[in-house]
Image (cartoon, rainbow, N blue to C red; front, side, top):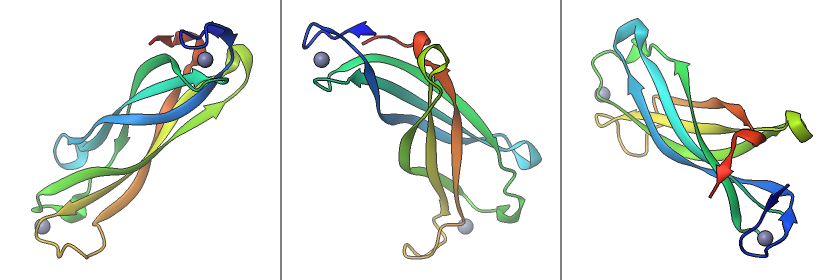
Length: 130
Ligand SMILES: [Zn+2]
Ligand SMILES: [Zn+2]
């Protein structure tokens, strides 16, 4: 329970759709990985106002050796909150779907890579007031 500044009551919270702050491909060759940073929100379960927030990041090994020589461009296409546990064990993370393309592809071509990355959950108690 936390106090909502909008309805001025102690309320429970619901996980809002996270925001992808950045997604990028880091490193070279076999050390290449996808790094994603998200901002997570917990909103008032009564009025929906943002109450608590935090950031989280995670990595996904992705050597993409098959695409050597391409200029890889990564883009997130969808994100959803992933909630697990209850009470003190409640955590909120995110699943980010992304696509990787190269400008040598026709725009309507299927992406070179279409995958998702799971951002490990953060305990609800670690969130800070908005
Ligand atoms: Zn409220
Ligand atoms: Zn290319």
